[in-house]
Image (cartoon, rainbow, N blue to C red; front, side, top):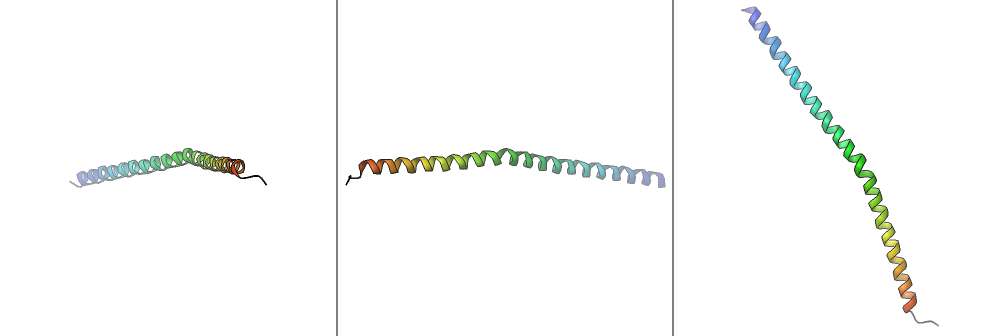
Length: 74
């Protein structure tokens, strides 16, 4: 009877150990996924910000040129 209890205890211990390892692997996988997405999004965001800055500079130059063309000459 004591041997059966010991076997059950070992089996239960192994079950919880395996469940803990699976949970840890899922956390590691999620962490790796978040890092990968961050590494992809970061350069895209920088490029998008640079593009908006360039577009705004270009628009400013166009408006300045248009206002210079329209303004009366002295």
